[in-house]
Image (cartoon, rainbow, N blue to C red):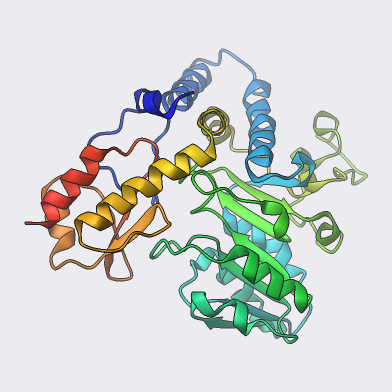
Length: 345
């Protein structure tokens, strides 16, 4: 599919610059969800077809981040996917994270404080240089929610490997527009409702096989069974032998919308999406007299920016005291011009 005609797949109203809060569904995802809801309302079908969307989504996500589908678990939120990793940390383990890290990748480690686990935070750009032999786990966002800064993934991984520290990456603000190699990390988690444009309630986690052996799937359920449809009743425990052992039973309608949304991302190609998004973000920065960046998320500190954008019908977010604008497939030059004109007063 050509990116030039991709806009026809969305019904975005002018001025939506807030994908970092939630993405807008492409029409195939919206239509699939409406059809499933209609079937649910009338009791016209069984649930198994809705469940199959989960497996297709797992496979699509695995291709997007370059890992085997057998190493991908599915769930609902980032923090839920990180919970078994945090619980497996040894007592008095030391965790290192950026000081402005989104709390879904901080609270799971902080709640382990009762076991002596400690969390140290440092400026994001200094993360790699603070990794030493005392650090057991490094947790960071590949793209920071607050300001859109992109982490030096390979540098952080290299420093962590040199000191045998685990690497846990929240790629929620990256996958869908930034090419990502999940296999560099030990754990990589993604909430799919932002740049993957899925309904809220679907999330993915890559779990390195060697690490999985140290984790307990405490939320074990029928969907995590070796054979799902023969795992409804009774013992013995018979979980899947791969990352599926950590699956949550899927919220069907979230996954019905996730599958076609990921299909659109695959068809357009992450590299093309990246170039489109960053070009728009840099045009926005240039209009404000600022140098170009390498992110689809930018922040602006213009007096009265929030009010000016709101009056013009531009929907952005405020994070850490600054207006945050984010550009995705359905964003266009007209959205940039609308925002620049508003900020010019």
